[in-house]
Length: 149
Image 1 (cartoon, rainbow, N blue to C red):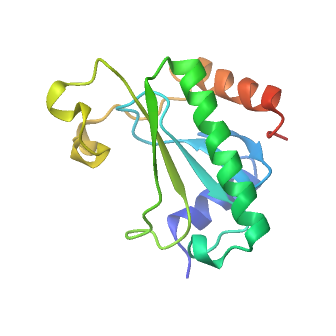
Image 2 (tube, rainbow, N blue to C red):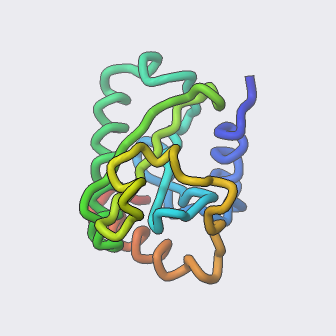
């Protein structure tokens, strides 16, 4: 089965994914298409797997370590209060991990709810020019942390 996750990973391998932050040990980091929470990223394991339970123990450990450091990067460069981490795979049945920064200035009615309550259709879209500084800051943090290639 081919999913959008497979396409994103292929695009990262080919250097044509405009949202690509960097290659990490377990796969790739890309910024989310919707940037209603500035700094939202996804971790895409490479090779693509159906779900977390198909990974070997070694790959699980590496992936979750990398995800935590991606969260560290997002916290450091956005000033977010915390990150929410989600592995769903219901619409795209391929392992990918959402890393959402959460901010104190979010609308009160959304601040404590899952991000899926936001209007994704109205969200600002990733813009390679507007988001370049944030993308480069994330990339630099991950390189300095030693997980980016």
